[in-house]
Image (cartoon, rainbow, N blue to C red):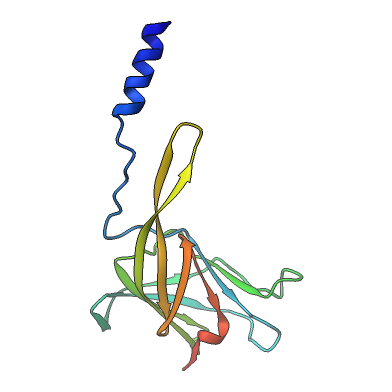
Length: 155
């Protein structure tokens, strides 16, 4: 029994729990746009354009988003919920266009570590610390996008 306990202790001590964040992480597959009240139109079309960080003129890819929930369908909600199937990565900039009229430029992702305590040790996780929507800085500690509808630019 002492040997098993000794081996377990050696294994735990020898493990490197420091997780280094890479330059890019894949974000969760959700975008939440808050403040979507009755004055906003029902969303019928949502497209995300992908760009290199240094070039907003030449798009790399475009993705039509078919999976979204308009807030008028769900009672007591004022948020538009878009599911992007994990296609967003922090190494690119994006432009989200809703109904060909409302534009959100999403850029300047900053990645960092957060620590969460467990029963045995402290684990480090890579999360998105901040990003910009149309030049406005958004700070958060999660891997999905959430911002207010008032940040949109009408085309």
